[in-house]
Amino acid sequence: MKMVLASKNQKKMKEMNEILSGMGVEVCLQADVGLDIDVEETGTTFEENSRLKAQAVMEASGLPAIADDSGLCVDALAGAPGVYSARYGGEGLDDAGRYRLLLANMPKGAARTAKFVSVITCCFPSGDVLTARGECPGTIAFAPMGEGGFGYDPVFFLPKLKKTFAQLSAEEKNAISHRGLALAEFQGKLEEYLKK
Image (cartoon, rainbow, N blue to C red; front, top):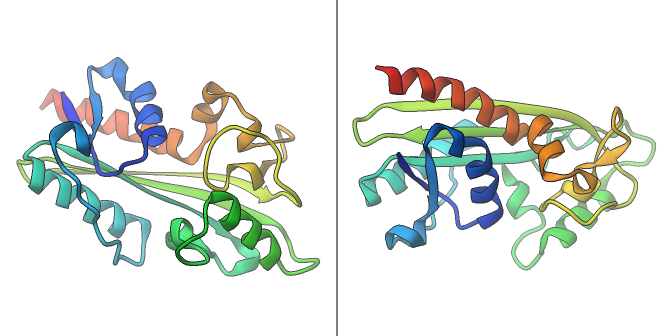
């Protein structure tokens, strides 16, 4: 089964294919089916934004579309950047600029607890919708560490492993990450759905 990813993020597509390819699911980018859609994320929750993206790409492509909306929720920042993680600090900031701003905004002496959240939604042309959610708790590091991953990975620290997401191998990250957990739940729901 072919699914169109409602994103232009090749790293996200690679991560999804690593997990879903064993089920005979091939996740492709919008460009692979001749689309170039930027869906405005007007939702206030990860669930709303994930569904908005999947619905729009499914309607435009006529194929099942899968979307992930994810972000970092920091307790000391009242859950920010949350659904605005990719837009934190406004236009013009790259990943490093965003996580540096996050580090600068951390209140002195505050708890550094945080979690990554991922919500995956798949919209089918039949009108069926599957949704899965994954969360990974951690803390905010005092300085970036590691070269891997993307986004806030260099500053998201896992106390049990004594590493940031950016210091993990792809296999290690997929096993415990918010997206890995959401995809595992999604995989189970998709298996049930395909049996119907």
